Image (cartoon, rainbow, N blue to C red):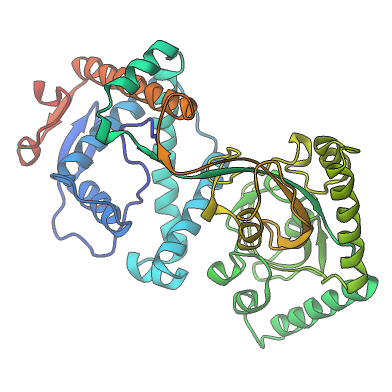
Length: 446
């Protein structure tokens, strides 16, 4: 119950194809859309690879998930719901990175699926399109569902005492970030290193992906060989996008490009419509001692003024923090996993964790070195805004969590009722091989 999911369907698998199936057949039809035996087998295999627990007959559960998915997609098409390609591509990159991380490397992922990375992407792209169509339909079904405080209390009171969820300790932290200025010599050194890598690639001495794995400062480069997958201009830094689109032929390598993230060289993999797929190697200059002293000195001054109440923290964050993601909200750090301001302690970067764990609520840290999401060196001070210890959920401290859980339960009830109603007006065929499953909706009416 730690994480509430509104949908009935387990959408987070991809169709695996580690081994070809010797036999395939249509095991269900929902409003003209078939469900194949291989669909069930592939979803089950991927679920198990991801470490999902076996509870009851999982293949029966996944079979019913597929039936419901077809209902959602049928209605989404009737309602002319639209999924934009950019929505799929953005999620595709994130999910593919997750699968590579789980299995260990791109090569191992390709070996598991017995497909090239491009074939895996195509399969996942189709799966994500269906997923997003079904999600949009579910949103339409539940968008007007509301929950009242009395319903939240009733929901909580119905939970058995020994089943009340455990809330992990969480912290809310604000930051003021300074990027140390770089000297001309440091910039020149980075440019020379990138020029040497470019020379090796152009002369055929090394592959771009191999050098990206060894030298790029982009966090995922070791897994992806610097590949970004297909993205539109709007998803990329303007200077980076300009250089990427200027490349004409597959394998062409750009000159050095400066973006807001650092210095790059870029190699064209492919173009498709208004999207481009490239590899890149990124490097950033290293601050010299004078630049580090300047950054720490500025932060020291800010910390001293804030501690004396001569400067308000929120004002200081807005005026002086150089992190564009947090300076406008009082410096509050945003958890990339759920976009909230709450972090479990093990979700912080190591350098941040080592500082935050020793702070008391309301206390400011001394300036220290850390890394941002692009792995660039930064200096910061942080303020512990709030912190909770692990505890069983209660209405006073965890109302928002319980409100979300109660709303989720109510939405699921609405979705179940919608499915039952839709079954009554849809053509449903269930093969005998799955009629033994204890289907929770009235799928066997026909």
